[in-house]
Image (cartoon, rainbow, N blue to C red; front, side, top):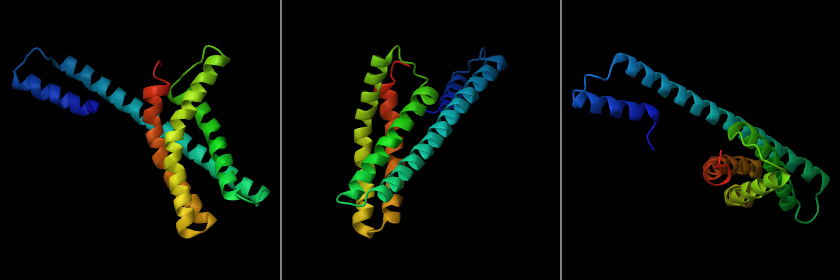
Length: 173
């Protein structure tokens, strides 16, 4: 995809190449203003999404750590990762729905369906996240490095998830 500024440059080159003289300064100023607004909106969404991803990562790791303190038995690592994933998922859904995609469900049933679809898209990205977290755990055998792997996996997963959610979950917005 082209960025707005690249599109603007292509239009300007095309207009100059064809020697179109009716493309007034007023139109150029309006186009530049639109491009700046579009870029500002994209930056705002990217910053908010990143902030919400950081919040969800924090909640995920915190929930894992709490789970590790409360339960140290068989499969405690797996249990803690599931607990963290669930906690992060719910927080991220609420934030994304309201502030990123500005989605308002018509009723609870519709909201439930959207959450199920959101979760389904999350399964794809969870494989990435878990792959890194379990991989770091298998390689380094420490809780701290497992968390590092989890954070790396979550970052990669959230980038992928944004595009999946935009295309498949909140597409009617």
